[in-house]
Image (cartoon, rainbow, N blue to C red):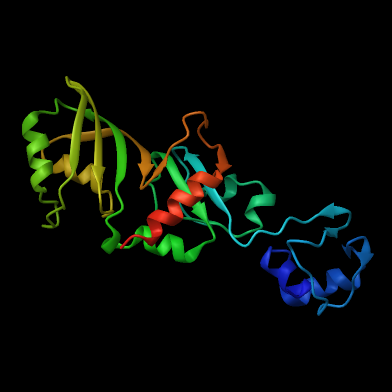
Length: 240
């Protein structure tokens, strides 16, 4: 791989900007200064440094975030803080983006990656990737609601949802539930409960496909996926 392509892929600038970095003499390969943009490097074997700092090359990055309320699932926004704004520069440099979206007031599991093929397949309606949410509902959730969700409910625009698996954790004036759905219509969980005359007052995504929210992550924190988690995601990605 050419040194300028490697640096550009890692977000250190455009090809033109990277060539200037090289000309400035800050890039070394195996302790040897490199100024030629066409210099070939092997990211697996060669040690590349920029101004004395070792550059770790990864083609793809996979991050699990516990998204807080008030932050939007986007890479940039003129008004609100985005999930990408919460990333350290060492991770942001890879250009990860959120896989799907969580509403601004929804918390929980969000996957960020720069693996476009994986993201596309996880979000494809044909894949029916299950997503599980924990929610607090204003109102008593009943067995009738469970049956309604199993059949699919009619949303406010006339769309009939695919079956959802509703489990009641605690029922009362305020009910705690878990809901698993296999599609991702706009505000779907909120609209499904609206269809049965109830209101979601708190919503948290706790799983997506084989990936489960790491409960040790505080709101706004994130970590890289483990090798096992990445393997499970990629394996899930291969299933038709």
